[in-house]
Image (cartoon, rainbow, N blue to C red; front, side, top):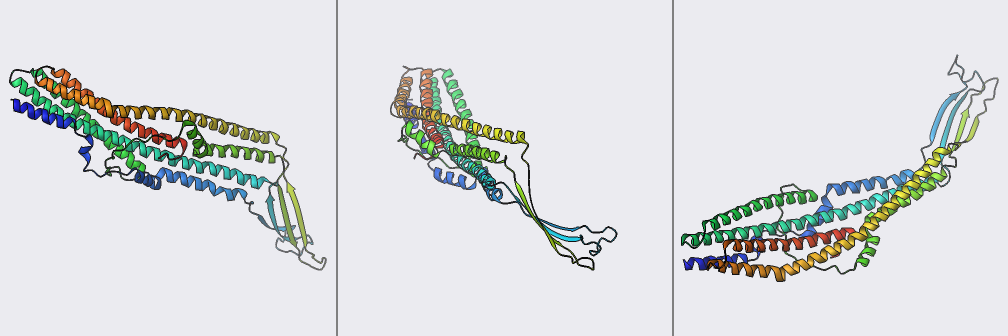
Length: 424
């Protein structure tokens, strides 16, 4: 009996003192930079955003161009009774003419500038989407890390519970333990298996999400995530704010929309001035006995009368509203960035301190407590409930440790998306 106890305790110590990462060393490790690069190259939503930018960029030339000239061919003053006899009347003419519309000076340039600013806003939206895609891939990557670590911890706890069951059965066999201890250990083992099933499902869901971001089949295998060290952010909150104001594509997109509104206001003011149409006609006449049939020409200038002032005032009001809307959205975005930077830095600082505390203090102490409880249970100084409580405490602390690591990295990804630049 004593030899079985010694063997069980040795196995127990080796199980809960082993490193969870050892369970998946055989799996190939994923490279985060390569995953991000593939997502940026293949993601269809990003390609759609880029195509939309190209679409609006091609509108710039259209906005700057003149309207096509109008060619006119007609027979003028022909006689109905003989429509193709051009010598019955001296005023019968065969006419060819051309008309060109000319917008008021400056309108074409303003329309081109309007299209340019709109295209710029979509360009920066595409860059913003790149940041979001990078963030989403990174977050999924570290969620996989936490899920895998949790799964390894569960496997290790199943092995610990198997040893607990062996200890409880051995003590019960010699009359030193209660059968209830065996049942409690078996119930806890079943709970661990239930958690393992849930974690397996979570990993499959995360794999599908990551594969969707990378635009590859949902069933494509995803390897393990390597261990890493937490790196502090080398910049202060104020420096990060300045960086965000200089680099964040969202702010540049809203700035382009403000400029677009201002250009629209200038264009609306130009609408108070008329547009012109210049026309030229050449009239050919046939000669006959009563007329020399001299050819004639016509040169004309027409323009609209901008008397519908209510429509033009509405155009000015629309531009003013667009400027106000984009300005307030820009203010809201700046405010969100400033508060977001402070919040994320605080979260990262907390997670970093927690991870360090778990690694150097709480988890080693919990391991020692579990080891002591195991020895105490062998000599009947500790009951099985205390042993279980120590095991569960260590289990929770280990999961919280890896959760702190993953949350720190995800917060860092969110911070990078917030400031618009990598901080690594």
